[in-house]
Image 1: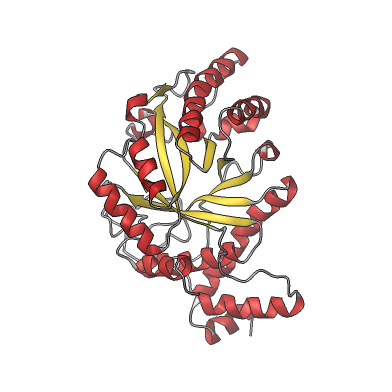
Image 2 (image 1 turned 90 degrees about the vertical axis):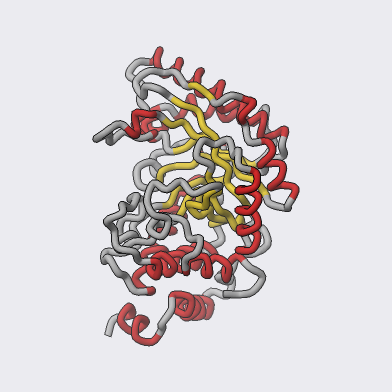
Length: 357
């Protein structure tokens, strides 16, 4: 009988499966970290505001209450600038007056630490039939690359200065700009050096794990390898806990290889999956109203990813995609990525809270 079949028969939950595997490994290596986040672990969650301005104080105050009840200690904040045309090097930041200072200050006053992740978006992403996304941003001449980085620098340096003013603890210098990182490492290094002159906290870049992680060549200029972690966790639509655990450990091994190569610890800057059938196989896919609900697999995947991340020393935290300031209603909430009101929230409470899961 295979190890996988043996574990599936003997161990009914992924937490117990991890405990069994850890006990076996610890017998050979007593230095293996315990599968539970220590005090410095970034128990993170993304709290999303539709336009990055966090205007609904009563709503986000209640959301912060709920995050604290789950044991979340780090909140990821998203702000935005627009690139109207992905082929033209012009980026338009949101008005400085609409920067979410009240939200950031209130979160930190409650004891949360803040991870600020500015984001360039485009209306072209949402055109009928479009396959464009921020990873499609690509210039075709050196002059255009110069202009794009000049425009992006105006946006990101202003965000870094605001982050410094408001005591933000972690800052992302970029997000899934796959084509820019493929060829423009020299320009990224110069920009990171300029950000460091304005911002004293920790720096990362939020790389797309499936398309970008392996070719980013400036991790040594940052403090943390950052990965948006939507790796496939299973081959089947309804995986059992052991398949999910093995998939999560394989995903973390990919991150760990980059961490070791560049000598930097890692943080999962986004991680999660929708609560629909098949989501563990394609966790990057946005669900539709036609999908079949499967909150149990979402919860089991949460447990597997938490077990994998907290079981290796290089993984310093993770941020669950996502929680809402106000519901966005792109798809029914019982199908989308949020764990709120679902079994996945109980998993988070167990792992992020005061007691051992």
